[in-house]
Image (spheres, rainbow, N blue to C red):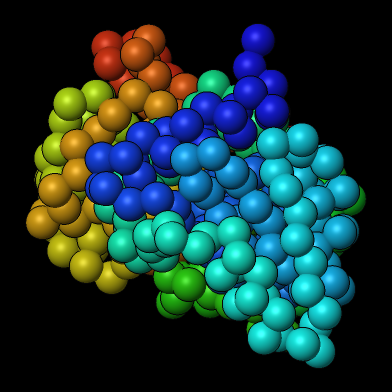
Length: 364
């Protein structure tokens, strides 16, 4: 069975294979996304950091972590779990020149490149989840979805968008999930804005709630809609969004260009009577260690592969559908499906699939 240490070794070997093909001796990894991909540890200090607080140097025979003495030991012990394959080097935070001296000593005579020099190659391996990553993603996704849905199903009139965001954040953190994106809109704001960052608005009837939650680098995305009292227009719009989402999903088959996936969803918008609605908000795409590794467009060249995760998010004014799915050789796996919400049936690959619809609290 794949475990974290074996997963690390497999990824290091993949990077070494890239180095060999490129004719270089090593690479410095310091972005948060690649650091987490390789180590499955958190490299950040600030939640919004795009760079890790230490660098990981990978050569053909060594993996070295170099960081300030403030964080290096903590990273090695708590985030890298004392990984025996990694050497630790710490330099005094107030003597940054020692970092370069350390690097020069162990890379002398070697050609070391940056992540940018291997951007395409790292993207190719990072976006195809390993067995260990896939299992971690399943666990993260179901936990995050249960938290969001449980809160949504118990909303009360008068709560503020700030308070709801705070409660979601609290429960996510209690489950070791970082709320890197929170979107909450009540009533008119849910009709007006596609990226509704919270304001001091209080719930009357309709709530739109979306999150991106991260744990050990992997990021799950989902959105849930709620009504205190039934509103047929909002429910109908949500049904149309569900059919657009299903059109995206129906094309998520290994070997299919993502441009064709995008075209299928756009065509469904037209069938639903909203041919230009896709222009008001991106429709999502490839995900994993970056919230949107790639946004789907007509021009996208990427081709779907087994092991990739996707999160599409079709919207209409007053409706949004978003779940995270995994492409497998056996079909599409809906990672954020809990069975606890209210669902609408759609035909996916010739089978009935349940997609979350608007939860109406007065009906329960």
